[in-house]
Image 1: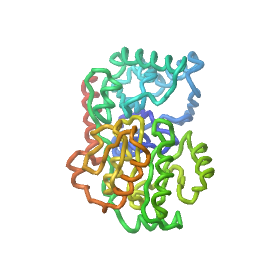
Image 2: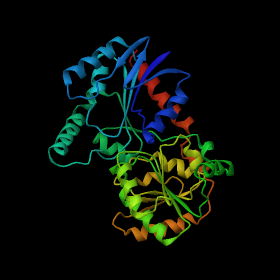
Image 3: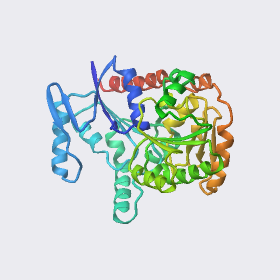
Image 4: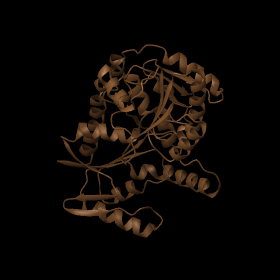
Length: 360
C-alpha cells in the first residue's frame, strides 16, 4: 500500500482540518495515511517533532532522519502560508516522488509589522522563488489562493468537497443542538471558524451587539476556538450579553449546528475559499461575508458580499433580513459544481497516480 505523509492537521477544528479529515476518509482504503503530529508512532518507532525551527540544526537533523528512515510515496503539505517549505525540501532529498503543496489561503496569517513582518515577507519571497525545486504539484482551494501563493506558476484548483448529504437540514439535527443550548431563539446568526485576527472576530462582536439591540429574540453564536476567544468573552461579559452571544468552542458536529442557525456571518480580512461557506450552503442558509472573500465561494447564490467599510449597523440590518428568509435545498447545485467529497478525492487520487507513474 502506498504511503502518504499528510501535513496540516492540528487540534484546531478549522477548514484545513476538515478538508484533511474528509479527504483522508476517502483515501484511507487505498493509501496508508500518516498524519503530521507532534508525536508520531510509525512502524513501532516513536518520533517526537521539534517544537519549532529556532534550533534549525536540530530541526533539520530530525526531518532528514525522519524522511530517510520512513519510506513515503507522497508528501501532501496543506498550508495557509508559504513562510516555510522545508519539509518539501527534506522530502525531495529523501527521494519522496510526489510532493504536493496545497494553498488554503490568500494572505499570510501572521498580521505583523516591524522586524517580524519583514522577516515573514522575506521568507515568503524566498519560498516562492525556490518552490519549483521541491514541489511536484501545486494545488489551491481557489483561484485567489493559487494566485497569491504560487505567483504566476501553474496550479490545479481543488474544490473543498464535503459529504453534502450530511449537511441537509433536518429537524432532528436542530433539536439535538437545541438540547445542548436549552434556549430556543427566534433568529440565530453565527460565525463559524477559528477565532483569530484573520477572521475579524471583533467586528463580528460589534455586529452581534447591534443585532442584540435590534432584535431581542436573536441569538448569536461563535462556533470555534482560537487566540481571540478569551478577549472576546471578556468583552461579552462586560456588555452583559453572555446569554445572547454564546461561545460553543470547537465542535465535531458542524452539520448539526448548521441545521440550527439561520444565517452565517464572515467579515474576514482575507480568505481562500472558506470550508465553512461550502458547509453553510449545503445546509441551505444565507451567508453575509466581506468583499475580501473570494467570489468563487458563492457557489449557489446564497452568499452575499458586503464591504468592511460599511457600518456595523448596515451589516446587522442585512443579517436580520437574511436570517428571516427560508432555507433553500441547493444540494444538486453543489454536486453539479463539483463540491462532493467523492469528486475531490477522485481528483487527488488522479494527481497522485500520475505523479507516481511519472516517477517509475
